[in-house]
Length: 226
Picture 1: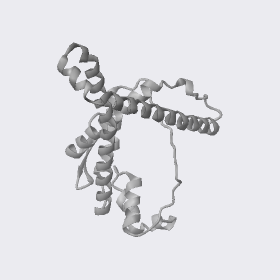
Picture 2: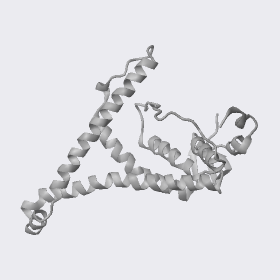
Picture 3: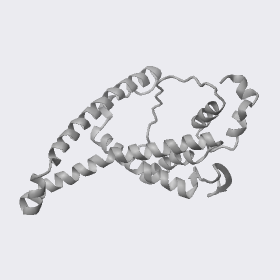
């Protein structure tokens, strides 16, 4: 797609985005796919987003709701199908990531309780749960090392692009908390996605938006600017 596609509103690129509230990258991808157009993009694009030090759960939940709410908006049938595919795959992969850790916790608790119960001991001895827990532990360490390497590259890039700002270092990261945050985020994402799907509304910076048939049809201010 070229600049004149936007300037002339070819394929409805501008008019379809004019209502607002849409995931612009998914919308443009759907329009390009529908009209057999190509979109050039870099293979990797990293945009660090610093979190506030006073971040509370309600603020985090609202941020997560924004990420899932945009998948409920669409401008065409193709856009709707792409959003549904992303919705389904993301929910499946998120809980697919969390579920092994829940099962591992069950196996560990069972092994700890085994000495105090004959039935639990027999069940624990006949299963290979602890072996699977060990494999999961190794996979988790590999995952954290990969995240450490990726974060190292991102930090170097940030320090190069913003030499006048305060330097960021890997020492400021608590990787135990990072791992817990990844688990919590993947556990809550499907819940947020289903919440957005059934509510079709969101409070976005003090303004509540309502969707109908993929488009914003009602805007309500929830507080006064006094």
